[in-house]
Length: 507
Image 1 (cartoon, rainbow, N blue to C red):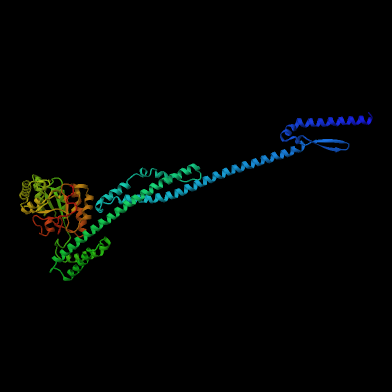
Image 2 (image 1 turned 180 degrees about the horizontal axis):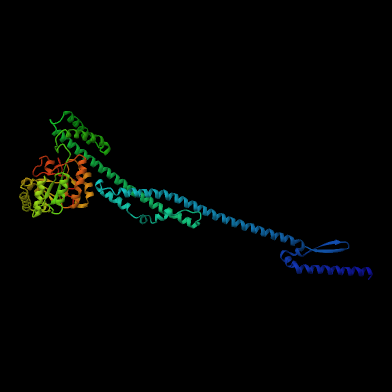
C-alpha cells in the first residue's frame, strides 16, 4: 500500500469515527431515535454535504427540533386562546343570565306594585264601605258579604306575606337564583290579589247599588211625607192666611205630586222640588198660630216607668229644657213613692198614658186577662192623678185585633212610634242624641225610656238640636190635635197605618 493509500485509509477511518461520535452524542442528548420512531424513519436520516475533499453527514433531526418547538408553542398559544375564549363565553353567559334574571325580577315587581296598589286601595275602600249602617242598605246580606271578604287576612287568601314582598327589592347584587325566586314570588302574589280585588270590588258595587236603592226608598218616603204634610197645611189654612201663600203652596204640591209619579227619585232630582215645597209650607205655617197640623211638632214619649232612680232625672231634664212629654207607665210600678212621681209628671204638664200592668205582650193574653191588665192600670193612674188615661202603648209594639177591640171599648187610642231612640240598646247619651236627631221628622213620635240614666242625660241635647231645626215639643194629644180615636193606631201625626219601620223591634 502506498503512502497515499495509507493516508486515505487513515483519513477515512477518522471521518467515520467522527461521524459515529457525532451521532452518538445527538442520541444521548435529544432522543432522536425515539422521535424518529414516532414520526417515521425519515426523521433519523442524514444529509451529506461536501466540504473540500471530505463529505460530512448532518442529521435531519437538527432541522426538526426548531419546528417542533414552534409547533408546541403554537399549540400552547391556541390552547390558551381557546381556554380564554371559553372562559370569556362562560362569563358572558353568566352575566347575561344574571341580567335577564334582574330584568325579569324588575318587570315582575313593576306588575306586582301596580297590582298591590290597586288591591290595597280596593280593600281600604271596601273596609270603609263596610262600616255603612245596615239601615242605609236595602239588602243587609250584601253588606255582610262585603265585610266577610274585606275582613279576611291577606296572607290566608294570597298565601304570601305582602308586608315582606312590599319591602323586597330586585337588587343587582343578588344572585341569579335569588332574583328568579323573588320574581316567582311577585308572580305568585299577583294572580290571587287580582282575583280577590275583583271579588271585593263586585261586592262593594253591590253594596253601593243597595245604598242607592235605600236612598230612593228614603227619598220617596220623605217626599211622600212632605206632600202629605203640605196638603194638610193647605187644608187647615183655608180662610186663615193670605190666599197668595196658599196658591204658591198648591203649585208646589202639584209639582211634587208630578215628580212622585216618575222613576227619577233621587236626592238630586228631588232637591229643588222638595225645597220649594218646604218653603211654601213654612210660609203658610208661619202665618198661623201654633198648630201641629201646620208646624213642625214632635212628641217625646217614655216607656216602662215610673222608676224611682231615673224618672226624677228625666223630669229634671225636661223641666230644665222647658218641654212637655208623654209617659206610658206600667201599673205594677205605681206604688209607694212612685205615686208621687206620677203626680209630679201630671203637675209639670206631662201627659200620662197606659202601658198595661206589666211588660207582657198583650196579644198573648186571654181576653179576660187583657181586660184586667188594662183596667188595673187605668185605675192606678186615675187614683194617682185624678184622670183616666186615653192613650195606650202596647209592650214591644205588638198588637192584635183583640187588643184593638179592647182598647176601643176602653176609650184608648194605640200610640206607637216612628222614631226608635234605641236607648235600650246603646245605653249611651251621645248615641241616643245622634239616633233621634238624625231620624226625626215633623210629626214624629219619639220612643224613649225613663228607666235609663243615659236617656236623661241625652234629653238636653235632643231638645236643643231639634229646636235649632225649628221643631216644637208637645204631648202626643197635642201632636194629634185632638184627632186620636179609640181603637186606632198612631205612629206619628197623620200616620195611623199598620206599617212602620221597627215597630216589632226586639226591645
